[in-house]
Each structure stands twice: as C-alpha cells, then as structure tokens.
View: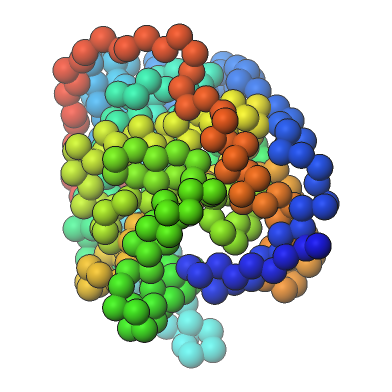
Length: 357
C-alpha cells in the first residue's frame, strides 16, 4: 500500500510507492562512468589555466598564480548567471518588479585530476575543497549587496554538469530564495511552538531510531529523510547546533570531509557512480537569530524523472522507502579499497579581493 508522508522541514507531502520498483539494486545502473570524454578540451585541467578567468583563491604546492601546481582552484564562472558589477535598484513593481542580476558566480575546481569525483578523493583533498567552500562563502558575506549564497555540486550530465572535471559552484544572490524563506519560516514556527531547534530534534530522533542512518561520526550525521522526495536522497547535518556554514571551524571541516566523502563513496559503490546534485543549505547573510536555523547538505541522486504529476501538484513520488535505502547504503563501503594515506603537504593559499572577478 502506498504511503503519504509529510516532510517536517518543508511541510510538503511525499508519496512512498515502493511497489513501483523492485529492489534497491535496480537503481545501480552505472550511468556516469569515469571516462575522459572531454579531457582534451577541459579548461579546468592543469596547463589550461589561461582558459579560465583569473583565480580568486587557490591551494598550491608549487607554481605561480594562474599556473599549474594547484590542488584546489576557485575562478569566476566564464558564463555567470549573475554578474558582480552593478548596483541594486528594484523597479516596475508591484506587478512587474525587476532589478539587475547582480551577484557572484564562482567555480570551485576540486582537484587537478580529471577522471575522479569528490567521493573518490583522499580525505585531505576533501578538507581543502571544503575549506575553499568556507573561505569563499565567508568572503562574499562582506559584500553588502548579497543576502544569500548557495553552494552546490552537479555530478554527471543527467544532473546538469556541463564538464566532467570535478567541480562545484557558489552563487551569491541579492535576494533570499523562496526555498530558503520557506525553511526559515517552518523552523521559526517550530521554535515558537516547541522552544527547540527543529533540526536538532530531527538529529536526535534519527539517531535514536537508527533505521534511516547511513553514516555518522562524532560531529555529523548522514541519513535518509523520513519523507525523502527521491530514491536515496541523503542529508548531512551537524550534530551540534549551527546556523551558518560559514562558521565551521577547521576541526569541524575535518569531520565534515569524513562524513561527506563516506556518503558520496557509499552512493558511488552501491549505485555504480550515479548522477547527483548536492546543495548546502545555510542561513542567509542577513542578520538572523542563531537559534532559528541549522545548516545542512542535501544530496539527491538523479535516478528517476520528475514528471507532470510532480510539477502539477508539488507532490513527489519516491519508489523506495528511506528505510530500505538507508539499510542498503549502510552495507556499502565508506572508503575505496586499499586506500593509502596521502603524504603531508604544506600548501600556500592564494586569496583575492572580496567578490573579485
């Protein structure tokens, strides 16, 4: 019998219809093989630094700025959704309100290696990627035009990645997105009614029940949400209360790298490298009471299609229960086989100006 479940974070309803699929292994289709299809023209590979705009931030072991020798590199998007130049001035309201698309759109190139992804990288490399996330997130907070920043990763063509080279993106916006406003409002109402953080209660309840837990360490929890929209949708939350991703300390970055890398590798191993999107949900840049929100990462494998019913109603149909998905992922390995520790390095970080393009 199909089941309707309500997502406490968004308020949306989800249909869990497990009879529409057979087994978790049916989703292991190997849609995104690691091949060098676009290596010969990839602008993110070492030696082609002149094919991107000048770097804003980099972690280097050698070499000059905008040359080879980097381990992580952040550059402006060559085809940005928003542009750093300009001032904000709304006009045409209330029916036809508009403003210039002022913002920042940056690309975080996660490794010099072309044929890999974040779940396969060594732990210290994932830490450096997350540190680049944090540094750019915090830096853009200094621009008074920006109210919100979103960090996201598209893995695979199906998930919207136009280049195979491992990379993430950061977009800073002059407005707060509707989805973020909805999450904030639900969290605000929950706190008014219960005098507790909604997300802290979710973490506590999921740890106590255990049936939807995929992975955990001392600081972070990875789990399948009770009302998952998509098969194998996985969230990562800090076990401690923290509203903004930008407030992560270095030791917390280490633990986050462990949890994120383990979760992505489990998905890679269990589902044969599926396409996915992940998004960092964080508090807005505008002042917000710390107790009202709890940042988190949402990972959404692209294994099924969103069609007319979903678009027309806002209901999602998930063909595997979160409990089944969690049990399947718990059994998957969290690390590549025969992993060897990376040698110690002393990288030099290169920073640019606030919002530099």
